[in-house]
Amino acid sequence: MAVSIAVAKETADYEKRVAATPETVKKLVALGASVTVEKGAGEASSFLDKAYEAAGATLATSRGAAISNADIVLKVQAELGDLEGLKKDAVLAALYAPYQNGDLIASAANRNIIALSMELVPRITRAQAMDVLSSQSNLAGYKAVLDAAEYFNRAFPMMMTAAGTIAPAKVFVMGAGVAGLQAIATAKRLGAVVCATDVRPASKEQVESLGGTFVAVQDEEFKAAETAGGYAKEMSAEYKAKQAALIEETIAKQDIVITTALIPGRPAPRLITAKMVESMKPGSVIVDLAVESGGNCELSEPGKVVVKNAVTLIGHKNVPSRLATDASSLYAKNLLNLLGLIIDKETKSLAIDWNDEIIKGIALTKDGAIIHPNFVPKTNAAA
Image 1 (tube, helix red, strand yellow):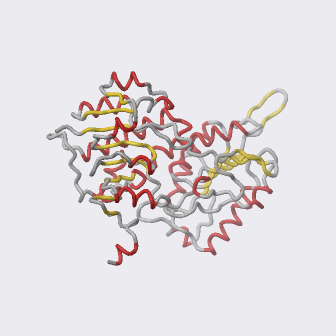
Image 2 (cartoon, rainbow, N blue to C red):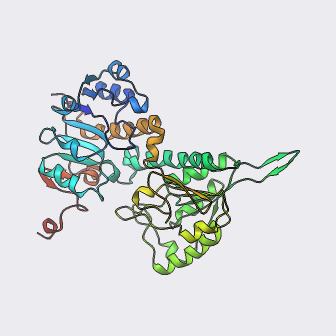
Image 3 (cartoon, rainbow, N blue to C red):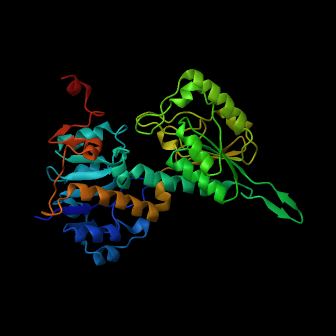
């Protein structure tokens, strides 16, 4: 029997994305799946109901009608309400923010839902096409520079006119992961002078390849500061003190600072203190992409743009959603590639290989239990 897939409308605040586009629906239908889309699911990202119908989807007038018989439900952000009405052993593939949402994971287990968390896609070659964090962070880094430009009272490039020369903007990017590297590239394209910092040694070459100057205390601890998965490690207090002194000196010279540093499962590292903000020139701008995880800047506020000490601090929530059409297209393709892994091409039915490295990485729950080693309750783990 062909697998049934439902696309539910997003209900979370600041969320304009959708988990499937007409393009991916068409490909899912071609795989033999039946696809039901809740009416209006794509409107906020400029994908209209008629486009989904033309792609072969059936429209449902309500969330309940869309998901009641679905084998697989696709969402951007999973919420507790998304679990209601799902049939036993249905798959809910979405962003779970698992380190912050233990209740959601427990509820999925209690309801016998198979929860697949797209944030946890392992960083291995065969999973790159499913890597949601990379696809969405890339857009966030780009948008961060545009948001900075909106509030910056000067131009980015050097301009030479008969009335005089305008100096180029100085942009400092803190964190040279996917978002940071895109921010560097975008700021360079706009004509800024860019420098960047990161605790991972591999990032030095990446920053310099984009035309940025690398800023870091490059001691022995720095050379070992990367996990096998490519994430930054938590640094020692001694290193943090040395790096903070260098950053404090650097930041006072900048016009725009963009912070992107995140550590999975932990609050965002504090990179910019109130004192550092005070040291910046009037009219400077800080964009804190980590504001929802506690913030890299001490003074930034989630969901707000505020001015403190004549410095504008931008703390937009869900920055990828601010580019909802492209963000949805990329996220939908990430999900499409995952579904290609769990739908049998011959029988057109759901066929999850629980020994697959990718599935082991993203599966939170199965058969009424939490199975991911990072989230199994301590009492269960001890037993």
